[in-house]
Length: 88
Image (cartoon, rainbow, N blue to C red):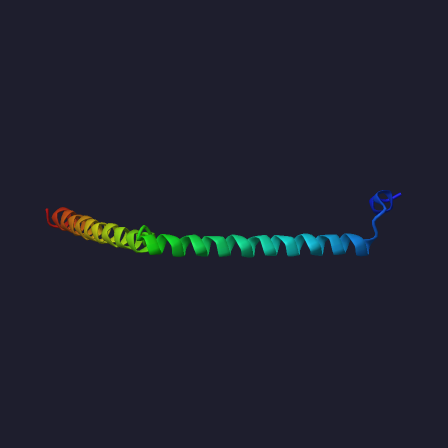
């Protein structure tokens, strides 16, 4: 005997049950997003909403600028050392 006949469920019933679970999951996700949206609006009204993305981007740009300078310095030092070794 297979598992389906042991539980007494047909394929159609199992499929309907899975569809129902998927719909419940979608509905729960929609409610969660709506609650997050309302909370964000509330924080924005209170003035406590921070724009973390812009802060992250500015920090990333600063770090990128520092790394660019470091790369240029290291590359120029390597070139200087190579020139010294070549001519000495």
